[in-house]
Image 1 (spheres, helix red, strand yellow):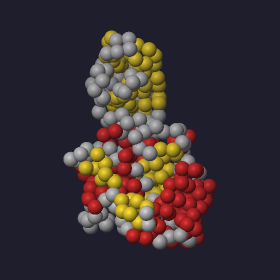
Image 2: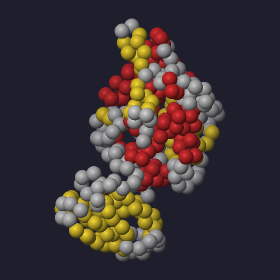
Image 3: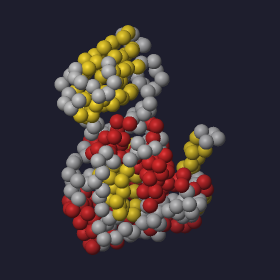
Length: 362
């Protein structure tokens, strides 16, 4: 299995973070913030196991809707098997013998744990595994949720090369059940924060809706016993698919891609897929495919700490072309020493500009 070592990094991003861990929430739903290099890296380096009930289907529907909108986000989902599609992010959906995965079929019983182990044992290229709640957090006790946390921690010990992703329960319930859900979800959040885990905050994504008329996010809450309890936003209260709206599913699919990009190596700095409009620009000396050596031309408008780097298709740094202080001017740098294949040339000005170009070396 490929070891994902991203938990050794402290991430600074627009989405909620904690030291050495990752939280994916509603602020992690803008795909234009993710450089394309890290989507490609996720597609080339990560394969995932995802088990869920019908509510958890919001993620699989959502990642499909994202691909429908833009085929660049190629994802292949296999029902009870792991697809083998080059260049696509591949997902094993369910367990080997069942598709609708209750707690008892993933972590809550010895038999369920064995089903999870079977998927991981028989598919050694899997890098991540996660399970999505239905509505259990509306009624589960603190001890029951602790059993979930303990079970995932045990699996982490058994499979150190797999990143287990924790989830909060959906936020559809109100009244006393919704209040109990808030306590149990906070229990999960607190555990993840204290133990540097990866958390996909499903409940948070349920509660926030982006209002296009105000260009801002709005959170829905209700009052229970003097507490403001977050709950599913009314904009998502339709049965279009998987107990919610197409919009809600799509937002969750975008957040899933964000999480995979971070696990693939993106430091989540909020740089757009497109070039930021800061004045700095760069170009290649020839159109693809290229032969080595080839040149990278950079136009520098202001004094900056310029770096030009080469990354392979996994997102790993292959070579540093140049790094240092440069004044305004036009510069040309030679790239050499690359084998045949696909690479990304990245330019950063040390301020707010980062951009990448794909090159095919023949």
